[in-house]
Picture 1 (tube, rainbow over the protein chains, first blue to last red):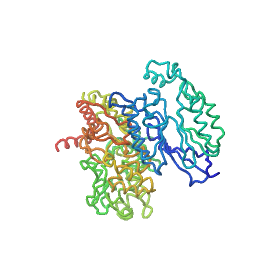
Picture 2 (cartoon, rainbow over the protein chains, first blue to last red):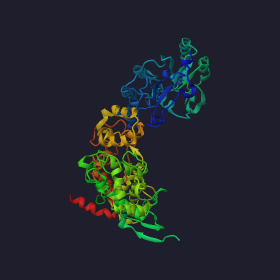
Picture 3 (cartoon, rainbow over the protein chains, first blue to last red):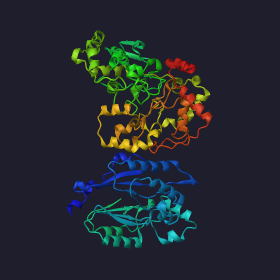
Picture 4 (tube, rainbow over the protein chains, first blue to last red):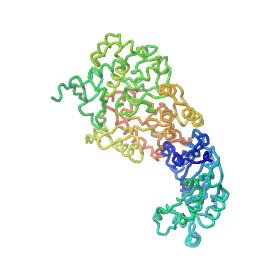
Length: 246
Length: 383
């Protein structure tokens, strides 16, 4: 099975020209195998933060950033196998923002997978996002690699469901950095159980790529570079030979 | 033993500046007000005779396939070193290229040459138009070398300037002389320079002063047309997609871009392609650098003498300075409401300038005319 083994050093090759090309992160990611003929690429875009001002009026710079990222992605040569839109399509989770962002993403010439971000979630707890993009967390296989998107921006139920008088305030509280009213991210028991079952079907030698809004680490709580149950998630991933978290 | 001889080299085509000549080596004694010191490469020092030789070469029509086109055809001194009012340059047999001739004036401060920066120096730049099929149309540089190695006037000049004769005279010497002439075209001292750097209160009108405020604030012009505390090049030497040209080929971008991404082209191939294929030309810097950031991105031109060099933009598609400001005011589209280019540079956005502010901004740009060329403005006014 060495053919399928990822070369960790080469695993993530970001095209520097692309990374610098836009206010958004647009990266061409190459998965490099010992047998080069098996290499493939996917494109990664994230953090559009489409923001409605009023009505059909949105923040122009953020629109232009996503429009540009989509147009650049469509020009990638060689073509990527698929696109992952990282997270935070919207700024304040509004239906209008997500709809408008989805309209722009539709112009991508490739199959596109979306990951949930906190800005997409905390207004209506992912309802609008789900209507556009489906389940909050899911997995798929591609050319011998198992891809997983996790909804890792959840937090304690009390904070989410009871503390705030309005959904708008909940959304705003979660967007602040160093906010004493904030709450740490977590994957949560239900998603961990799903992950455990999902991984049970996967061979330990199969490379895994996991997309997560929050790093599966505990780095800095104040800015939510933090996952409260990072250790539990890491434990689920540990038996696998090659795991990369994006 | 500093200055042995000080002379103003108007005869050699130096418009401004005092040149110190030391042992036959000329150096600018301080640049004109508003400009930084002139960068001179170590391997091509300035010298009076070299500058003069460069001027002769620049004006020699024998260096074209028809004997009718010289460098100066498109960079005419009497047109502020452009070919205004042509939209794009005309080469041999009235063949047209795809781009508007940039001025030679202050070209020495450009870090790269041509609108897409595909050439790294004045010396290198001078090689290409001779052999471009729509410019001077030579097959190769041999006909030039035959002339400079045999014409007695050139034989004498190359011997005196470079100490070389016969086969030792190559395109290196030819382009060094042309570049030396171009490096001598350092000009400023405009009303703006006298006002901003010279403290001359009355040099600008009220409207021009308001225009400068817009230039550095709401108009955002200064982001690319750089003005600093002690000098103004009016360029950042970088490349930007400002929504000109590229807007006309939107649907062709994927096909054209892929052609460049797939094929490794030589410098000469790119040089010919971008001047002969209008659509490929609009990819601009991308054709050279192959980075998406450069799609449709052209080099920021300087602005001194801009009022004299209509029409504007890399393709001469905008007739007046007012048209240019309106284009930027619309956020990178010439006609309000037209689709914005997907690859438009981030800084280009609607400016919300009023008609009066647009007038002021245009008035400011008219304060960038160099006194020695001011009569051209009067002549243009009569047309």
